[in-house]
Amino acid sequence: MQEEGGNQEDPYGESVEENEPKRGVWDCFCIPVQWFSMLSREMHWSFVFGVVVIYGISQGIGGALAEVGTKYYMKDVQKVQPSEAQVYKGITSIPWIVKPLWGLLTDVLPFFGYRRRPYFIFAGILGVISMLLLSWHKNLHLVLALLSLTAGSAGVAIADVTIDACVAQNSISHPSLAADMQSLCAFSSSVGSLFGFFISGIFVHLIGPMGVFGLMTIPAGLVIFVGFLLYEPRMHHTSYRQVKQNFFEASKAMWTTLKSEDVWRPCLYMYLSISLSLDIREGMFYWYTDSKDGPSFSQESVGFIFSISSVGALLGAILYQYALKEYAFRSLLFWTQLIYGLSGMLDLVLVLRWNLKFGIADYFFVVIVESIAQMTNRLKWMPMLVLSSKLCPSGIEGTFFALLMSIDNVGLLSASWGGGFVLHILKITRTRFNNIWLAIFIRNILRITPLWLLFLVPRADPNSSILPASETMDSKVAIDTSDTKNVELVSLVHSVDGK
Image 1 (tube, one colour):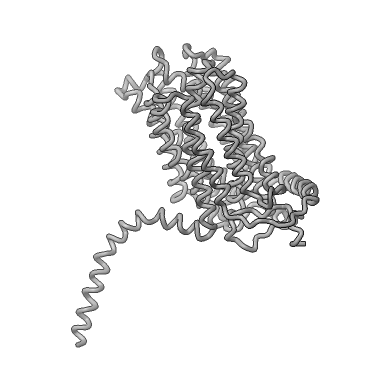
Image 2 (image 1 turned 90 degrees about the vertical axis):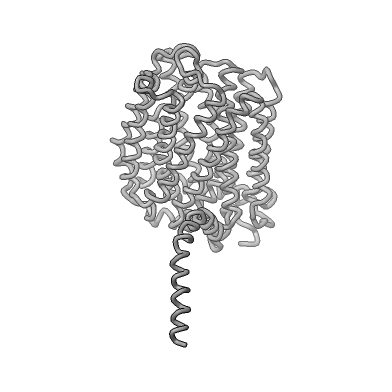
């Protein structure tokens, strides 16, 4: 009987060993599902759903459609010069600069007893109306077109700052998952961009850029859906007399935190590193589609190139999540900034047509160049996002994170207008690209200069606390964090019943 029992155990043990490789392969497919499930358990499923919709669909798919559609809209419908398109691109990004305003409103001013839902709903409605206006009017004046594009950008920005507030709050309550949350945002954005760029060129060819604007009402509509679906307990008998007081208290807390050397130094680095990386992508887009000096890519080709290159951003997010997220901020930013600057030289090889001398086709080489650019930019961006979430004081996470992101967006605006200025000075037009190589060279040199500013970045790693204890505990702005599973930030407006 003992031998039979032993024989029964051996086959059982062998079967387990035989199944281990299969479970290992199966686990490779289950890891993303388990990761999403873990985040849903820790921070409520509606938070994860909101991140996927806002980052993946609204900013990912919708952002890709908007980027390609707007490029062709400015080039073929409004017929503007590359330098002008670069400046107009900066104008439409202005709503992202005033993100602290949206963040402060979501922190201090609830509507109808809710603190998050109304802002999602308002953002979605604003996006739907602006996109419908662009899609319905064939001869829309440039000024009105810019206003509509800016309004659509404002809708995305308001939804972004609202979901960012949830990310910042969960980064404080779950510090070990801060990098995972940024990876979730980056993963959703990268996958959405991949699909969005894939279909963008096809739809621009089939229905034109104005038709693409009509399609963008779908992501805006889903933002409205998030506003209705997001779990948020309703506040009763809200005291609006405290709104003004809390507004000033939040502003004071923001200013006090911003004056801290541990905060303003990395903020200064983030602004300079972004603004010094001049944005000349509109000039490159005009060159891509030029039939004389450029490779003359079709609309579908442009969409496919951006789609395939989005894989680079996805790989960057995966690489950061599984290999680089534990590294200290300063060390990681050094290498990512250096690689980001050096990789830009590939654009120089492209416009000088050296790739053809080596027998590399334009399409294939552009895909490589864009993929490397997307990956290095993502690797450079993600540690700065994690760093920003670590700089947020408790109680005003949404507002202060929005302030930090607005600093980054001011940097993007500076880079966009600086790039437009360079394109204008070098006389790069719709049909003239003689000096585009010089614009690329100037951009690449400026990309490396932030390496001498890394002393502004703390040596801390993502798992350590950066703010002094006084900055996180002395704020008069109270916040209820007793229920860590709630996805919404608790408003700065207190309920009368809670007094």
